[in-house]
Image 1 (cartoon, rainbow, N blue to C red):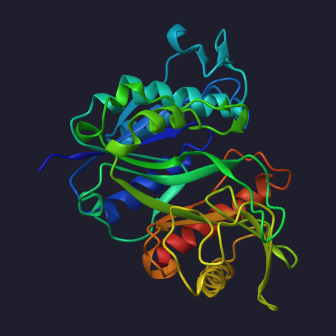
Image 2 (cartoon, rainbow, N blue to C red; image 1 turned 30 degrees about the vertical axis):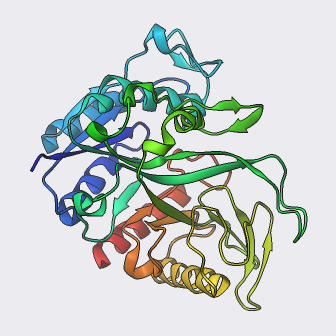
Image 3 (cartoon, rainbow, N blue to C red; image 1 turned 90 degrees about the vertical axis):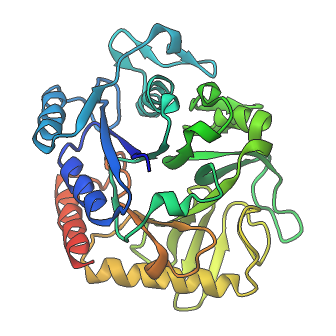
Length: 347
């Protein structure tokens, strides 16, 4: 059986490469090759530190893993109508992600003859998994992101979904068995006049080929700002809620499909809100046990069809390692990194 290929894009946290690689070696039961795209360049989130280019290369050399420098290509200077770079500099952090992801996809990933996986540089495996077995019967797997014509208004008018596309944080693609992968572009900006994040441009590919994709859906459970009740939580990065776990109440700020599921891709669960409360309560217990700082701002990743976040989540997402939020100073990140290590050691 062919090796799978697992890719990540590294820039401001070279120290995560070895931690991530160790969790992959520990938990992935397939024969795999791990490849790092070196994307440290001016204009990205977290500031530019030229020394990190060499640091990323050195860590990869030490671990004997391939490291590929992301290059700027004039053919990709504009994506989805947005300018990506000027000179040697990305124009913002979203662009740094969208450009590098597309460059890596078009120049390397879509040319593979094997199952290929892309995960954020601050994602860590937390459960034994065979991605080959997980993808049996499927050729494309992702966390669905949604954008709407209007936000949640009331019980009778929950807003109309108009855009669905893959979140770029974790993607699995059986490259030989998806149609024309070279046509996929991961730009951001606007689609049909609606603002989209990185990966939004894949909507165009979906419009053309979605009936040829056997999709395995993944859900991203985010515990975000949990300082005072109600806590900010978010599913798939696009359904913001405020949950009061003492009173078992929730305020929905974005789209909610029904009382049996948040999104159309999810299976109907008659006990949906119990399912939500129970899983988030388990997440809170884990992060408190491991002394994560608050706001915690983390994700747990599981297959949508699975039910128990503790038993079934296979990825822990440190989340926003680019440090774009005001409380994410050096002290916060040192405490959070130590909590991450405790959590991974305790699994």
